[in-house]
Length: 205
Image 1 (cartoon, helix red, strand yellow):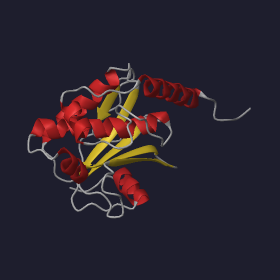
Image 2 (cartoon, rainbow, N blue to C red; image 1 turned 60 degrees about the vertical axis):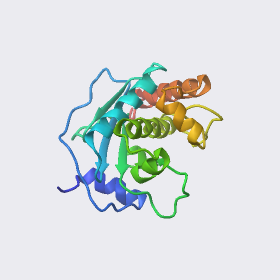
Image 3 (cartoon, helix red, strand yellow; image 1 turned 30 degrees about the vertical axis):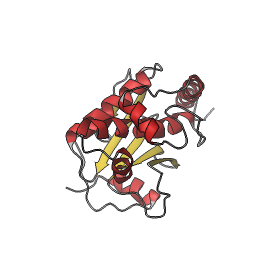
């Protein structure tokens, strides 16, 4: 199955060339969503793992009053405030071992979030689908948090903690890790800025 042009462009911008790829049908964004996330999974992954990851990310943001909507592909007229998510089978070789994902801004497509599935598997160190999916959801939420905060910084605790260890992983599996109050405030400030940017006039007389 061929990659759609927008996925190819984002991969090229990041310098990543995956070995295998898959894409899905187009679903238009819901108008009442706070944040639309256009996602593509590049490489093999059990659907149950993805579904658990998606649900976990939805729950984490739901706790702070942010509603995510995941869409399988970028439509012809995409939501200008959406975030693009690529779940890649392998991380670039030059990344440090503890890096599970990344967030950047593409000049054409806006916020782009990457999750490296091989790193998720290494960190999770579990053969159970549900546990892998939960950790995947936390990585997705972490990187989306960067995109929504519009800053690369980390926190000392919670979802936006800079470096997770096995104690954090154990707490995640019990759903005990959330966004801190400070990070929640930063995310809501970022959302407000994004909405202002979307409604601001583009120029003219």
